[in-house]
Image 1 (cartoon, helix red, strand yellow):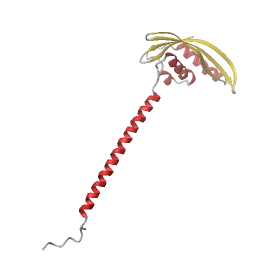
Image 2 (cartoon, one colour):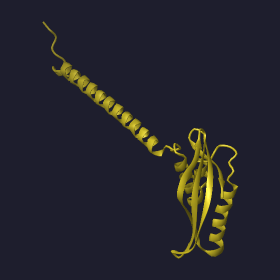
Image 3 (cartoon, one colour):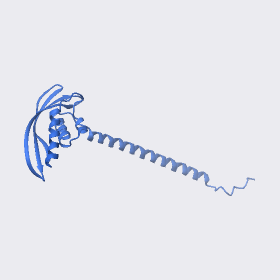
Length: 170
């Protein structure tokens, strides 16, 4: 005679264990696929971000424009350093112009801005280039222009992993 079945164990227990294992397997597979999709999406986002924020130093005139924007408009030495040559930059004349702009703003309560026009790459030989620019220095107060002057400048650039401004002369 066979022993009576244990009253605490239902007769379909092995089927439930099998279903639980399958469910856990599907949940684990789903979580793994979701993790791979998230990692792939993060990688794509990182590549897109890197491409959008990369500093473009391929064209000497574009680097000159970016340098002027950083140095004279934004007045950020850190930002300008991204476009300046690594060592021996001769930018004293341009530094004097920026100091004059700041001094005039303080002294006369005006806003002094610089814009550039007529940017011409006048010489590009191998790892060196020269860019000529007309800088227009404009003073304004209460939204009204009160002064304006145009100065011709020449910028010397060197190719150091892309173009970089190394000199500025009026």
